[in-house]
Image (cartoon, rainbow, N blue to C red; front, side, top):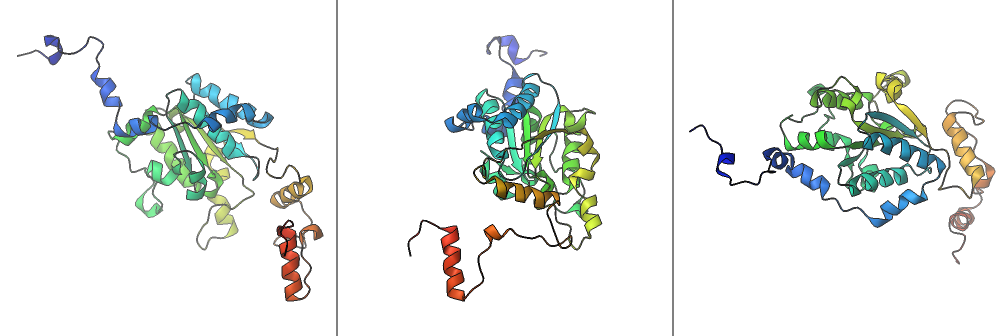
Length: 287
């Protein structure tokens, strides 16, 4: 009586039950993710803006400091390329990095990516409350507690309440008053693209539910990606997209834009227009 298993010398001196408890199913699943060589090689291929963002974010991770970032970049600036490099670097060192996105399509681009609502059990129906449905004693909670980095792509597409719900959960989980519980979290996206959808909502209601109107927005460190890698050989089209997104392009009213003649197909006969369209989109096809 009054003895424990350690008293009988059956276990190594350096054995710790806490080590076993920490290696839960979810922790092991994340730590077993295979890091692709091409993602590790991506680190050396980052452009100047991407390199700056990579170094700032990874420095916070490895110094065990909190960091809250928003990676702002138009479509084509290869935000996902930056995310994959970050995930590969951190995971290759044996740490946990969680890849999430607002939409399933965006999540599928990231290695072991999942929607943020699925990963963090965020209710999609706000009538069910605003708490992540994760027990603090669960395997999932233990894994989230251990993770070094959280990436949430296409953040402008979701309601601010979802991001605020994650913030509340992490602060409670980590017993911290710091934003996102002191975790390093990277939100990213482009406010020029599709925003969150408010059913039958007015313009003012849509704006009110946007991340940019959340108190969290002011706390985020903004990192900008400006070099469009996808359309770098067509700068005029890149500039046109930015003008449309920024609302500075010539328009007859707030709901209409004037398309450049260079991207229009003449409206002749039906057959002629179809052939012209094919020639423009697929110039190398012989028909």
